[in-house]
Image (cartoon, rainbow, N blue to C red; front, side, top):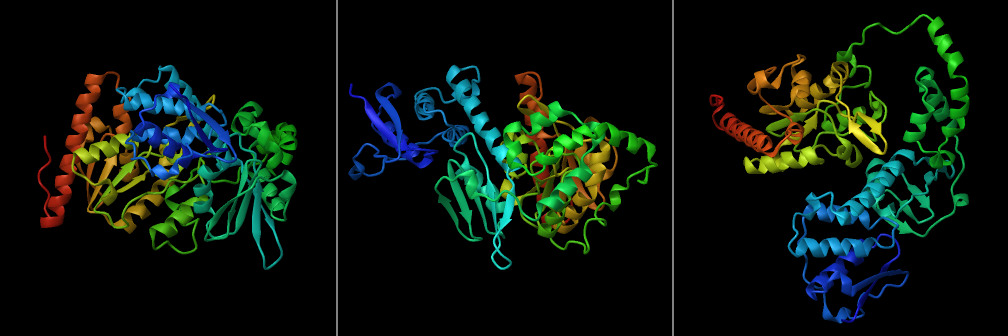
Length: 480
């Protein structure tokens, strides 16, 4: 049989790959009969006159993997992805649930590499100011390992929407004028400024928060690989800070502490705003400005949902995917929650989802970021923000997902096994149930199935409680 050649754009040609897959599947062409090549002048099949092929329905997880892997620099990425698509559409619908499969394993490693590259770009890109007094623009230089520029663009547009900026890389450039994002050609390091007037202040701040008693060069290199150092202004200060760390520790020991011996988390809000926020967006701005209590998080993860939702779900803290995407409940536990909500007849888009702690706390193990449970002190630190958030929403019903959420809402450590069910959080009706991540940790499938059914039953009762409260002002008795 004749081999069919598919020619795609250099870089991450996601649209071209999608069109190719639709045509290949429509023509029932197996992977062994297709060759993918990359060029600057693509010509897909050369017969556009045949029109668009019909769409192909794929599992969401596969669509997410394709979106990541097309950004990888491996020239085999498109051929490997088409093999996966072909197998999924030809009798192996659950293939992605088999991580030991060689093809799945290889593509998962590629997706992880792209995800890490995105995380590094979010964390280690630094803008520098250029232009005169009336023409202010910010320019950054970054050297990604993969073709992630377009995938990273929404993060920077959302975070720096109100300023004009450019991101220059050897693989292309991005330019934002406060309204329109333009993808441009590749650039050289010399095209970007090497310093600006703000850096002196930033270096002073960095040096002031550097803790000499916790110097760990190996951990620092794991968090901030050396390949990024030459693009980070703070890297110029690191060698001196490490060298003087022993002397600074001795000075700290000799000095009498001027900090209060007991922190008062309930006063955290008063110290962070001049005027009390009157809206969720104003509150979120305060949280973003304050930054994480424990260093490491990429960004604050705010609540999501209608500003005056009838039901608010409170979880523990963001996970790895939530930290990267800036949205609550989008990781494995979030997907399980979405599934359970749907089965219980609750529209996720009509409830408000948030967390007791607004930043991701984790332990670095190799290239993985492993969730680390927040301490009681950390929960108390974030509690004023959560209380203000709930006061602005004014829900009819508050649902605590897990023991950390209960601690944040009540100030007391309470086992879920004893408190599960109806509750009162202040003067607001509440309900206590397990966190969906608990279901993911259960050891066997039968136990997971029973626990999941109980969780869906809880959500169904929550649905009924909210409806009864809205219609009559009275709540039915809790199920035994």
